[in-house]
Amino acid sequence: MIHLNDIKQPCGSRIDKHERVGAGVLGDSLRQLIMHNQLEHVPIIMELPIMSDEEEKQILEKVRNW
Image (cartoon, rainbow, N blue to C red; front, side, top):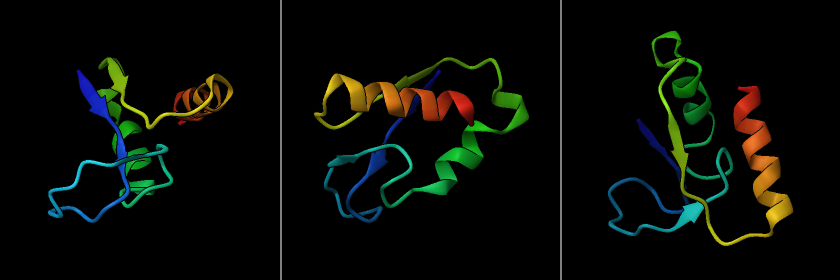
C-alpha cells in the first residue's frame, strides 16, 4: 500500500502540512513514483489538505490518469 501526499514545506522541515498532489515540494516526482510499473497493482491511499469535494474529485482523476 502507498500512502500518497504532497507537502508544502521542504523535506526535513519536520512540518507535516499537506498540499494538493503534484502541487507541492514533491511535485512531479510523485507522478514518476506512481507510474513505476512494479507499483501498478499496489493500492494507494491519498491524504489531502482540506478542500471541496469537487477539488478532491479533480485530484483523484489526475492521479488515476498518471
